[in-house]
Image 1: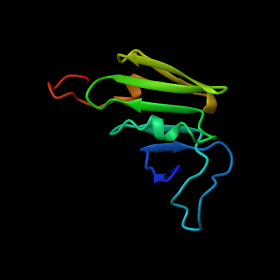
Image 2: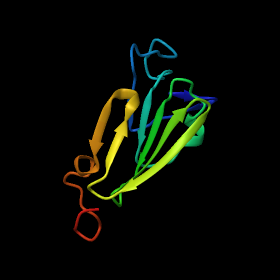
Image 3: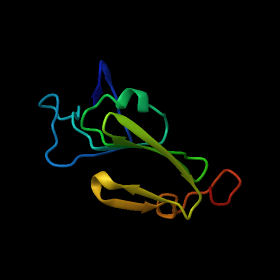
Length: 113
């Protein structure tokens, strides 16, 4: 995936419709609708992608996510935590309970994140 001059590699990319690639090797996706990241927060680099509608950053060490949704020329930010929270992704008509994202994940103290 390319944002400006950088090639970026999110953990998960969702496309609505047909995937568009920069070359015949199909390793640079041009039209993601939703991106998920775990290791590194790179929203400032991704927000210039015209196709991007939602960006989700999921923390590994605690049950927490940050979520950006495009609204016209602006981005709305939401943050939620706890196993009872639900991540709603209107661009792909999907809702994911954090309980499912963190299924079988233990924190460093042995309990749930």
